[in-house]
Image 1: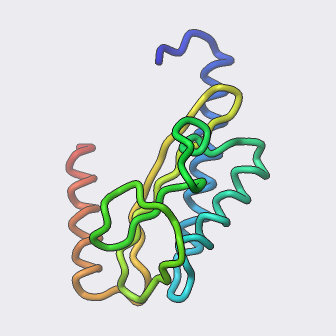
Image 2: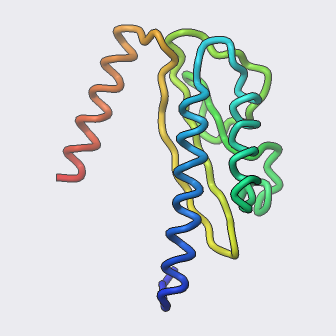
Length: 134
């Protein structure tokens, strides 16, 4: 997409802020005992409160507002009745649309308490990310 006007840039910033807010709400919801469907409901509430729409539902008729995968599941998992356990590695992915503009963001969260392997995974991923930015 080529941004042609200040209004388009403002619209992209606005939808990007919404996506970031949704992702942060999802990340905060990750804890032992919660289902991936409950995390998706948290996301949907933020999306709708901010006047946006779930892009996967809008574009692909995806059966949930967000994509959530746990442990060795492939990305773009469908949220459901899976209950998170301590040490689970959870991939959270959100794409939102507002006023014709879309923003996509994702993160990986590890359910507390983290295992030694989970801590190592998080540390290595952070190092790789920082090296890529350097």
